[in-house]
Image (cartoon, rainbow, N blue to C red):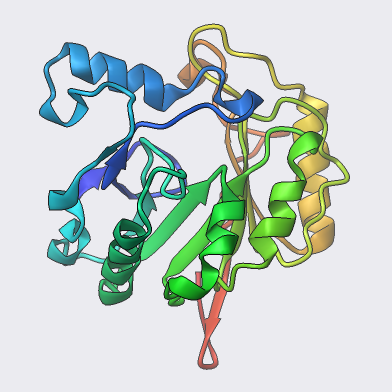
Length: 244
């Protein structure tokens, strides 16, 4: 069985790698680190190392056993392009995604520069979407790196949104996910930031998905922006048809 996900923009998660290191302000209150430590305390064998980077070779081909097509978030508990993930392991992950053509894989990284370095060593089938995280305007450079990757769908996760990004460059981007930070000591997101980003996406013709306001109780704050849900998904054009 696929591991279902409560993340609004995906349907399942696949974690052949767990653990990571903080590289930018968006990492400060990392939910994956918090969850990893909780799972280690519960004696989950996958998290014996807590949030130290760990490869799970036995999970490398897991999606091939999931027969029902679904959107799969790759490494919700890590970063596939962490410098300590060996290139052969990365090739193995991408080979699985290529073979499992009935799924859509959503790869999200804070290290798009490494993905760009390896672009000619990896297959980029149309069912592999590639994204990067942008928490404020200081990280627009990640978008430049993302644009060099020949993914059919390139997307941004602007979460947690920690500052205004109303001038965010969206050329070559197909989808933007936005949201506030949740959990203990979460940093607030201003409504004006979210509205300006939504408007920027509409002007650029980019699909916009508003994930959450966040806060200590994200269910209570909800995910409506100006009175409605924004659940837009990117459209992939394949051989004269549209898949979204």
